[in-house]
Length: 231
Image (cartoon, rainbow, N blue to C red; front, side, top):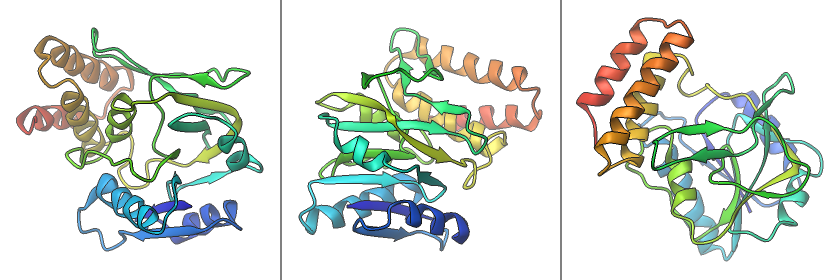
C-alpha cells in the first residue's frame, strides 16, 4: 500500500498519484494546516494500512514522484527499510542515503549513487518502503523524524540505486528560511539527547551552514529559537 501525507499543492499530489497508479493508495489529508506535522500524518496512514492488513507501506511525500519501475525495484530488496535515490527536479542526485555519527553529531547526505543495493545509516522519509507497524516519533515537528526512525530500526536500512524518485522539497517549510533552520536544529538536538558535547557541535554545524549559504541573517534567529525550545 502507498501512503501519501498531503498538505501541499494539489498539482504535485496528482503527479505523485500518477506515479503509483495501479497500487492501493491512501492519502492522509493534512491540508487544513492544523499543525499535526509530518510524523503524525504519516503515522495515521501507517495505522490505516496496518488495520487493512498491508504488511509493507511505501511512504511517499506529496511533492515526490517515482520514476518508472522504481517501486518494483524497491520491493526486490530484502530489508526493513528501503529507499530510492532521490533526485531534484533538474535530475541532480539530492540523496543517496545519509550518514550519521553519534560521536561527532554530524549528519551528511550521500550524493554519489552506488551501482548496487547498499546498506546506509539512514534514508529520507520523502520516499521510504517500510513495515506498516513502524511509527515515527511525533516529538519531531518538521525534519529528522526519518533519521530517528532509521536509527531505531532493528533491521537493515538499504538504498536501492535502481529506484529513482524526484523530490521537489521545501514546499511545507522553505529550505533556507528561519523556520527550516529552527526545526532542523531542534530535530538534530533531539537526536543527540544526553550528548551535550555533540549537541554543541550540532549548533556549530547549523551556524556554519547559514554562513556558507550566506544567510539570510534571520536564519540565525531560528538557531536561537531552537536553543530556547530545545528538547
